[in-house]
Amino acid sequence: MNGNKLLEKMHGLKSVFDEKESELTGLDREIGDGDHGVNMKRGFSAVNEKVSGGTAPEVLKQTGMTLMSSIGGASGPLYGFSFVKMSEIAKEEIDKENLIEMLDVFADTVASKGKVEGGEKTMYDVVSKSSKLLRESGVLKLDDLQALAQETEDMIATKGRAAYFKEQSKGTIDPGAQSAVYIIHALGEDVGK
Image (cartoon, rainbow, N blue to C red):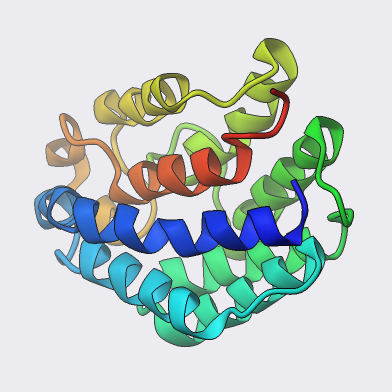
């Protein structure tokens, strides 16, 4: 996947988040402040307008900077900083091995920036398992990523706003885990084919 293909994928996330805004907002209303859908839509609308292209590393960096300045809440810095960090190790032509490295960096960045680990019902629960999924199956199918997000449904949140809900957070997919599904799917959809 070169810079042009990656740009197409990042721009394509605008329509994904336009479509999924109410789903993400619904999840966030259950265990958060109800703005995750709006924030992700705003972020990728800005990416669509402002990220103009270049090499794959340049597209990732531009995407990260744009997300940092346009998404509110915890998601903006987490996604934004992760894209910037991924840009530092991305190759001009992202192949499966490079994407695995990028996903590991994505996971490490979310862990250190968000001070999270697995099982705490956050986006990390999807991000941290996606490189293993790609390593083992060779592709990142939407259904497989969705299954990772589904696992957060039975978890009790211990981080972020959802942590206030304690036991009541059980039974809802984490909104950040759900948005991570769409982002990782866009990054990996054509890699490894």
